[in-house]
Length: 350
Image (cartoon, rainbow, N blue to C red; front, side, top):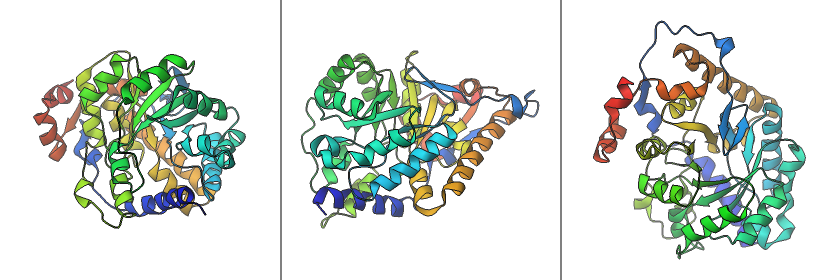
């Protein structure tokens, strides 16, 4: 087994371990109860729109893996779940397949299992325009994710050390593709300054990818003979990142919340802070590695039911109504948000 395959499998094993630990910023978010919601669960709609694509569920199976032995089976099971519950899905970084065609099948299995589904290709911000186009064509993808994972690369023993030109490459890719481009963080969150730069170059869908789910700093430290544990709390949580996005306030930009989404109530909390969809990666990985396909599907059904329960209790018919629902932010999240001049009282009184 080559070093790249070993690294991919290390990431999966270490990710499953780190998922068991850590506090979650969604616990700092709560709703003002509505005793007269004037709503019915049967009338709730889970439809949403991201990257100009209409989805029947706000839950996306977000990028996880591919490019090594064993990852084909994981992606196949994920794709079956996506097909059976009509979920959008993103594959893991395709840079491995772009460099070595022998591992292409670990990605292609997704399109074979989900031929009519909404799928997103995935490359890093170091990719060229030609590589981005090849990734989209490989998957017959409906859109492209460009992932940002600076801290992970810095902690990865064999990772990148030079991040110059990212913004220019992202802009070049966006201008060259005829499918939507999503820029996503990989577990370290996004500040409003970064969001504003992406908007300036024409990016209209951003996955804020915050702390709270898979901790890729910890994942890499577990692979390192000289770990740098002080960086494992680096960045913004998912909720903090959504508050940053909220502060930008650009009307035409949609957000995806990935990082620590555990159940249906977290989905509605994310929607109340401006997310049009949520990405679930760690929770999905744990499901497919530990549960039968039938149990995986039952869990997705339960998440959808939980979303509808929360929506009905709050008087919502569609997820877009969530941004008008009063929401309270407390705890460490509130303390840090106030340092960034986020107007939390406005959210609680809307």
